[in-house]
Length: 115
Image (cartoon, rainbow, N blue to C red; front, top):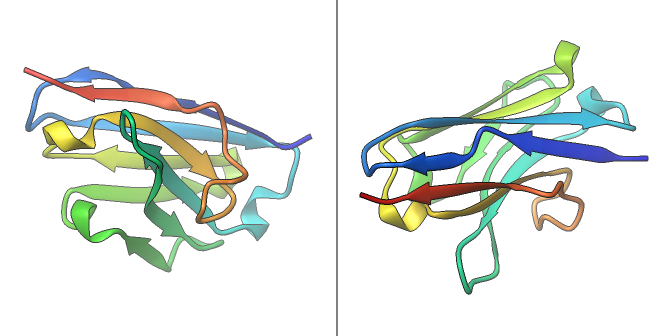
């Protein structure tokens, strides 16, 4: 069955960085666009970024442009999100997903930005 397992979250100060990873299994990873979505406390899912099959087409939500970098390694079935210059409002649970809405997502990894 499809499995998406995220890791790399944690507590970081404003301005800091984190790198999230997502290991995929149960499907042909290289055949799918992959996405990162997030959910802030008390809010709904929010699309963050997406990357196409080969990694040469990438899209970002405006609120992370210039700060976050999505990438993938198809040989390792792994999706990444490098997050730089983190802000308080980036706090939330981050999920990798096979769809932009996040309906097909993993269990997530918590990111907390706090001083």
